[in-house]
Length: 211
Length: 256
Image 1: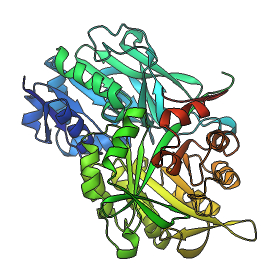
Image 2: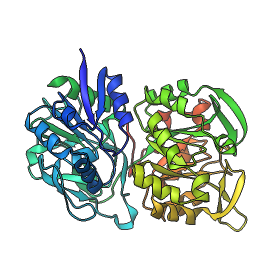
Image 3: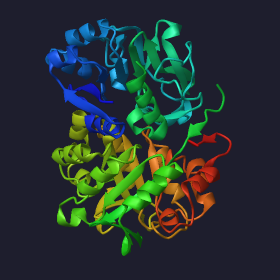
């Protein structure tokens, strides 16, 4: 089986890790910033780390906003990772208000600061996935159990407008944030599956092969 | 929500010289333990949450030998890798990230020109900028930051430096007690607490772990977010799982 995945390169973050994990799973990762290639991809990953506003600006500069929206409209699989998940949303409050891709209704908010330093912002480390408003069957989480820990690095989190888009939630900073979302063929995870050991690889493998 | 349980990371630390994993005492008297690959594979299988690689001779010669080792590791081990030693520029960050590192640790270059923290954070995100502090306790009770593996004094107050580094863009602090390193006498809990209380970014305690109780002390008393271990792991005295079971308790969780 030959699996080909386009990984969107918009200058935000480390694309080598995700490419390596995909290669390990037997998939071929094509790292690309070519709008035509993105629009015609069979399977697409939107990665990214860093600030929301910069991320959207980088997508705009490279002329990738419309191709990404066009791609999502085809119903082919799209996986946003970390900042890539956040960019799927309507808007973010990171350093002022910024519009996102608007592929999933909802917004991106910052973790509250901790009284008496009981938690740190950014949230760095391994946290558990708990069941959200929708079942995991048929999603990238199929095959994983609630309580599975994944590796997170982020200061902002996604709030989906619709509970049924919330596939998994994770407790942190006194609240439960959406750690995996799914809206049709659009999925997103706040953690880094490519850095979450065998559990993360399991998620990527399921996503690569299920559709 | 009452007590928020903290999930603590257990991180094997690899000091690298040439192609080999080495271990010393107070970062000196290095003993060669062999290629790091088999050690890394073992710790990954045991549940290591991240790995740290430091090329300990790199800043002496102004080069970094690690890229090959990192490339090999990154193809087989899917947890975060922090790599450091001899990092001098934003370009060095890029080289290491390209070879498979997820975070880059910098010490000497940041002391010389703190702007590297800001520039690297802007280019790659604060999450991959790790400030490595090598601190040595002084007769006046303060801690001084050292460079070049505890060889060179800087005159910089280590605790104050941690706070400044956070505001400059560092996303995490690898805090090594030079006087405890390799001694198995336990972490320098006062040092860890002093830094942890002052910064909001995560602090990795490093240097001195030798017994199960040391790990929990670093979390409870020191308020660290992660523990690095070298001696007890490399000499087979403890496993990652053993360290994790020593850590777990009220308010403290680990990844199973």
